[in-house]
Image (cartoon, rainbow, N blue to C red; front, top):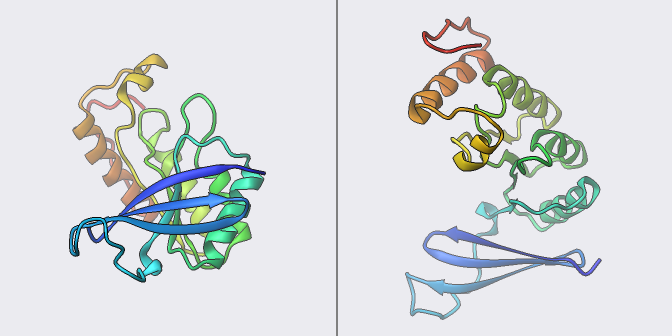
Length: 185
């Protein structure tokens, strides 16, 4: 396949370079604040390192294979971001959840502007069921300029985030939600 993906991971003040190439994973310490600058720190606790695809347009089957390899190499988590105008995060996560058993699965930051809050709760609940509880939902305001290009108004992002978190938590806990004033839904 010849594909090279680079991903930087900040782990206890150590900058790690993670390389995936032809179905192999290697990690190198580039810098360490806790030791002499530029010197490798030796073995790292790989249990807390995750892999993420952000803006990388791998096919879903290729993503599944890389995550299976990451799980085999004992990485802790995998994160996939939504790519505006192209692909959501939850469908690939569902495929990956079906093909893996231990690695935690996280949505890259998804936002309540392009995906309605109830749909966000339903989507993560579905992936959570398939993954047997190994999911992490990352919420954020998204890339506001790209969201506005879609013709979506972005107003009061902090208020929107607080409201969305409250609604999603209540829905996932199967609690009744209340209508939030000023929100058109």
